[in-house]
Length: 98
Image 1 (cartoon, rainbow, N blue to C red):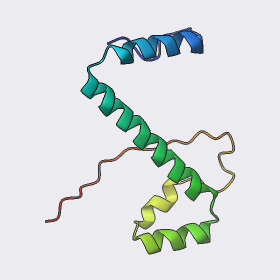
Image 2: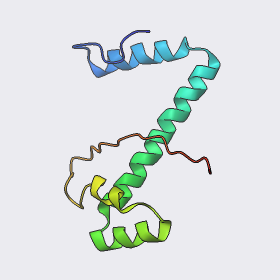
Image 3: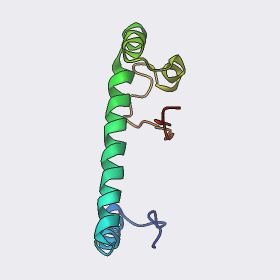
């Protein structure tokens, strides 16, 4: 598998290399990768929405959704990250009931 971030390549070249690599993957791997990318996009969109809310509104929404308060500290405050880049930490949620 080629590295996804080869050094000193322009964006067009990197994109072409990635697309060629992606096309050569088996269909099930392509499908899985597309699902992962879409999930990442949805998560980042939710984080952007929460980060745009004032703290009081965000806390109210979290309480209504039953989300842990510790998540509040992991989402940047409004205006804290105007560059549009968000850092999202992936954690697997244990959905099994015991």
